[in-house]
Length: 248
Image 1 (cartoon, rainbow, N blue to C red):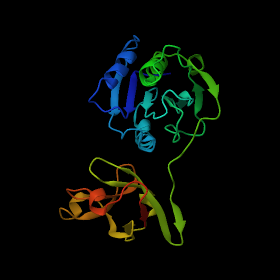
Image 2: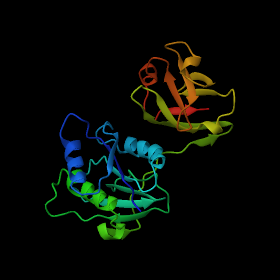
Image 3: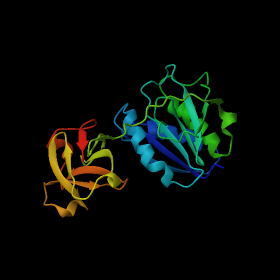
Image 4: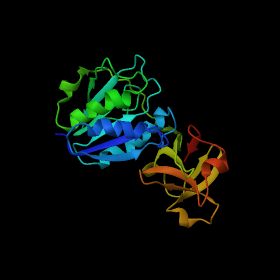
């Protein structure tokens, strides 16, 4: 059953009223849920970044949490609005790949679009009311119609090239750290990491293992290989971003 937490993950920023309007729609239901902001600073329209952030955070919340995820450059078009349930968690999002990291066993429903919904603000008029209904215990099949063909566009996975594992940068955080899709457990001790052809050296434990301004590679908090600059930005120093090749 849904619990008492609703998370919010959007690209709305905080300079405008959009986040507050979504929260007002959520609070219109007497569910007493706690609203948790994951982030509203996803780059505008960056579905891949939204997918990555959701993939690393949703399981850390208690079972029954409802996750409202809106990065929606296709708002008002023929793209579907979805709600879903996976491993005891609930999700509400546009059908544009944001939920691609969910398990294959996930149940999906298509949400109806109310006639009065603003065609440019489904987060407030479609997704938030559905999330609020789910939070008070309304069954998925009562908020939408079951479907079996959600749009999936999973994040890229690494490949093996001889003795080398080859992946890529899938996210750049606000510190300029380059987060790759290389699992740290696949990198043997002493193997040197290369990003877009630049040798970063072998894995370190943490930032303090190098001098200020120096590049380093390490296994980040989600278990994947990251590249950073102590006290600086690896993205700026190397001049690379999402999609840059990472080899180990």
